[in-house]
Length: 253
Image 1: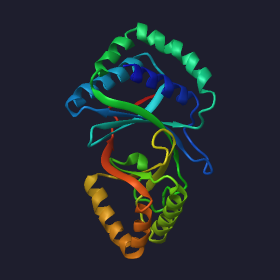
Image 2: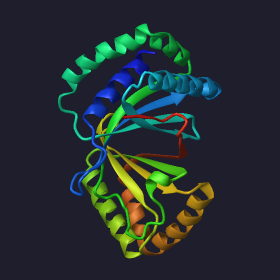
Image 3: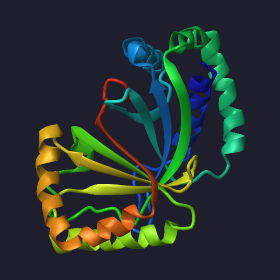
Image 4: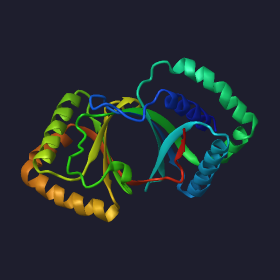
């Protein structure tokens, strides 16, 4: 319960400090909360989140976050930010507001989350210049109905080599005029700090795997050595599928 309340305070502060758009020279930053939910408690967890959203919306609580869930019962709540400066003073000013909501029943509502999540955490990500958004992109990432996540934990000391190889990978995508966009994120705050996160977008699961198979065949013919070199920099690799959850997202401005 405490984690969930603290999350609400933090994302509210970040909303004040955020901007809906970025200049081309400014890389996007995200505040992300991660909940790893007990598979047997998914229905309870989602109901608690929806009830919390409804409670806040009725009170015109001004904030916004996008929700995503994975096939592994992991939930991400994502908030765009521009800076972390000045959060301490903003935290103090918003704590009083959250106390007011607790008196109106928010604290009791939060008890519905008890026992639903195995763990919770948060991180701050910055978009890398290695992200790929081609002019001929077949899909706006905001319109995606399916996401594929790749987590690469880089061996300490291999970070510069890994990023250089990703730069070469992006050039190959540009050379082959791939239509599929992807974002590359580096961890600014959170563990492990050497983690690189890929997010690939598609209309649906079939669309993703069909396009991925075609692109992989092209890349393996021209860049199999690049893949081998990059994976030699990786200490741990994990990947999973996900989808946007409009029913768990929140947007009151």
